[in-house]
Image (tube, rainbow, N blue to C red; front, side, top):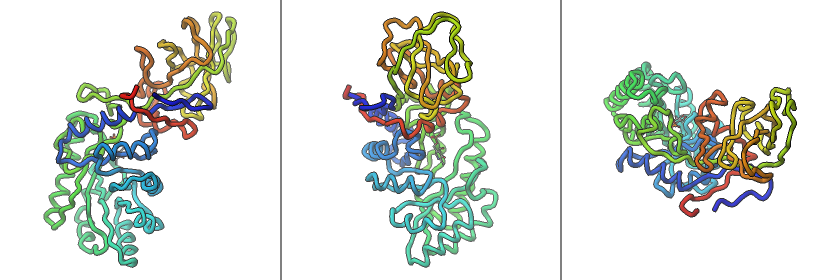
Length: 380
Ligand SMILES: Cc1ncc(COP(=O)(O)O)c(C=O)c1O
């Protein structure tokens, strides 16, 4: 059973059984030989990094990927002992905590390589790192096209040990797309040059969720899935390639019901005026919870298994929905903002369309004041 919060009833229910299922789908796609680095940055895409990482570690995740040193430390303090890769670079003042917490830095430019080597040498320490190569994402990473200039610098390293090499796709959800194929080709060329120069990093990784699902030739020795672990397809185009189960449901309860006569305005700015005698439900969730203001007069929620449209502007802490015609509706009724109720469902992808964004942002925008409550669907 999902235990409910004692106070404000707005919370995210996180289904750890769905998470385990999704992890098994990754495993099935990549096979036994390929390691899995679970991407749990941004508080595990809003699901709660500690609990998510512990569950994935118990399921066999080999490593974890975070965005920052702080996120890495949080995982260590949450009991994670597996390797943790900081995906988005490292800074000079971070060397000591990196070493103390056994976190693996990503090197993405030459200056970073040099200071890391200098500082590690000065402390007489050896430090494993992963090298990020830009093969076409146009983001962090040493440019693959400049390999001649940075390959020679690798030979100068004494304190730093090249444990991994990786790159990132910019458009992997375009199944079979030529840009993706070209990135793969460039990455292979980099690996060949490294091998010829005598480097054999044990961890070679490129595949995000889309490539885990559609591109076995990009699996190498490790993959880096994020979104699919949380039960969402990186693109609806590949939804038929693997069955995933959404891990997060976002729920609340009706705070107040208000009958309004025809012609009444609802919320700030009077953007909604009732066209009939209406029953409006006021929900204790708003944009400060991450319920996007673009959902004003556009989104919908589920009440008693039916869709109720958002009416008027979403406020900071409250949102109004029209429940006129939903039979039996009562104050205190469960409301699903995201997830399933009866036969109806609101997916992160649908909410993303309303909010003019992507499912990743929908999930990571759910704010810290919304408690995450963990359960395993099998128990229910
Ligand atoms: C470097 C890196 N690897 C892997 C991932 C995981 O991608 P996805 O969530 O699409 O699987 C991300 C996510 O943004 C990333 O930035």
